[in-house]
Image (cartoon, one colour):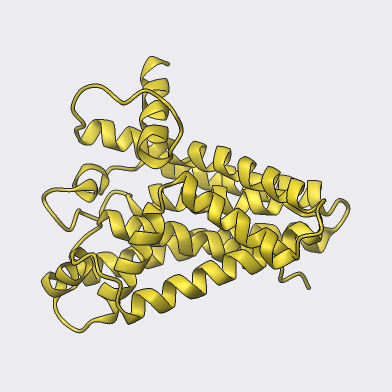
Length: 260
């Protein structure tokens, strides 16, 4: 129990701006693996905050798109924007021509190129519009689900068999570390999809099926995308994790709007 609480504390310290005490001691791969396994719990809390903010803002006269934009901004501020930075860097890296060494070099520059800027704009726009629409329809649980599933994509990208691209950095601590969590979090994601459909659209079988299919598709995307990135970059990096998270989040948010 102490180890689990320690991993959750480390996860909130690493991945959010929550005012928790700074972690003590050195981080090794065992500790990094525990943090990744706890990442979806961080997503559950962030999702609840995002859904609560959307609920409150929906009772104002703000336009739907502005409500969604504020929710997206709140999530970015809550995570120091680290995942968005990873998304932009990964897009620039994948958009260049060259071998894995060249891709990693582009990703490490820190500058946002055309691919990164375009991807960042589209993803943020997609999230804002989707969150705003879900809020307008009173489907606040769907916002929480999207944020939650996005964080479940992180353990998937850190699964066994995908090595780290670099010998140092965040990826070296967490890549190729997850096995047991992969048997737990996807199941809970589907359970979350069922709960979301029951809360937001009760007695609607089509909505229930759609929520489950959207969640499963987003998780499958996270698996395929992280594998593609590992092939292009020579392994997993922190940037790839951020990109996988953000893309999976917007996939769920947009997908939930695709009811038959």
